[in-house]
Image: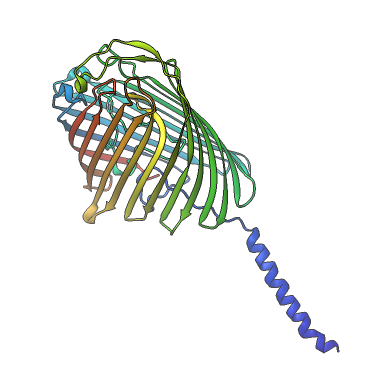
Length: 452
């Protein structure tokens, strides 16, 4: 009898061992899908725990419309002397990063608009507990050149499409005339890991756009303030697929004018393969426009008429809409491909008050033989104002760019670049901001340090 019970005991032990291994597997934390970074770095350009990189660049650019406005067409050549400094350090409980980009612009004929552009980015992560972390981002840009869809004088690795998922950044898909701009953006996120599969997030974002160099000819531009707050929840269904939702409250101010927007999004993040990530979001939005609006002179370039400035009450009823977007990113050792499209409520980029912005963009970076590196970009954007005195202002912007780098030595490269930008606005946009611009650039890049 004792020997007959032995097979039963062995079967029981096998079943218990299988159940134990299954429970152990379910208790192991699943690594979440990794959302792609905004830059165009290859997978092989991996981040180390700490380091620095310094790019020194010298270039010559020929611009056929130096003032970024068809109303004052003038071509010119610009000498650019700049640098890109990148510092970062990572520890188990915290990490910090710094990027600083100064650029001197010296024009051959339009010497009055010679300038020093400066850009600064700071970011940090601190883990208060194993499942609680704070993330902080700060950026300041003081520049005189528009950057919509235009490759900056830097390595192809640092290029990024001028848009992102909410709360995102200020609307940089519109082109303002050649004028000094001050842009500041601050973001704080609190992330709490509820379990091995789920997390809760609180976020806050404040940004402003100012034109310190406003003159009588550019008074139709809008200084902008943007405040965003929200929360979200994510649940990891599998090792490679995460679902969630997010609520965002947006507030835009243009002097005494205030516009509010409420957004609710369902989100999904899918890591389709080792190098392919898809992220999508979508949901309803509700916008409320109102306040006192100073109506400036009409777009003389489009209508040929001038209206005197006046204050007008623009308080209106709320309006329902839809916000959605998605990005497909392939990031391998040889190729970076990014396709993105979105429709969101955003600020008017200085040309308009609050708008519904639709954007489609594509970029491709590919390693070539013999030390070559190619980057291609194309984008299309349309911004339609939520309100207007006589009608709603509309701006359509298209851009394309190509950059080719060739490595001469280990740290020295030559850089060739072409940029094209086109913008059309209707008669309800206060400033006549029609643009047809072509830029041709040749330069050299020298790198000190390592990739991030």
